[in-house]
Image (cartoon, rainbow, N blue to C red; front, side):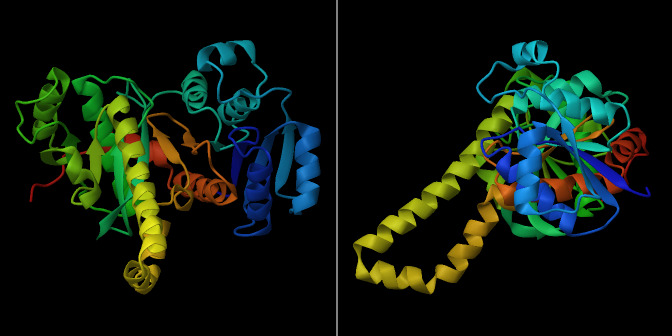
Length: 345
């Protein structure tokens, strides 16, 4: 690929457009000169912000969109009513081949629906999945991050959907994390194969028999943070709850530490000694460090960033999108799913 062009929904998210424009402006001044950005949103506001932040004008083009979809709007109705929103126009640019991928920190549901409207599902994939990384204590491949999917693209999933999620997640872990044989686990309420909702029980058998996967078996929720598995598979409702629980647990731990620091001299002394490690831990659980979540199962690269994303998170989302485009992620996942069975251990 000679050059890359990213379409960025500049109006999406709690901190848009200011932090989105700041991140894109910074990216235009750094990195490879073969990456270009289409910044989609209110032309006057975006141009003023670009002037304020400073940028490389040769690498950024502003595409005007008169409307945007608010985070509190019903996704489907908003898309039907605002066909010229920044999100819709950004998707059109990708679908028309004017951009190679999309980044949005806007309404997650609207972003998923809009992506499904404009982009084609990969062969054999009936439902897309939102994949999110999370910090673990173990180094697997290039980092300490685990992968969990789906975390919100679907409410419910059939056994076949869960099998496809496992295949897509496994392919993603191989491509992005460099793992030759990612360990895949199925999230359930028991490690016993015959216990759980019918679709999970059926999915266990499908995953166990699928020779394209390195399937471990079922795991329970307390095993998610340990990092023993590279890919954890679940339906979207469960994954969304689990991911937010992980985020909330990390925040609560720091609130407890802060409270202890204020109450007792001995605790204050101990926490000071641990301050270096605590800062590393805070960095490890900070979503701003990881960028957005890739939407897997479509023929285009789509990164759905956290709506609370600031400049750092948007910048990391841009890097993730560029990495996935360079790796030709959709094509590679399609080939991986259709590929040969992996060797057993």
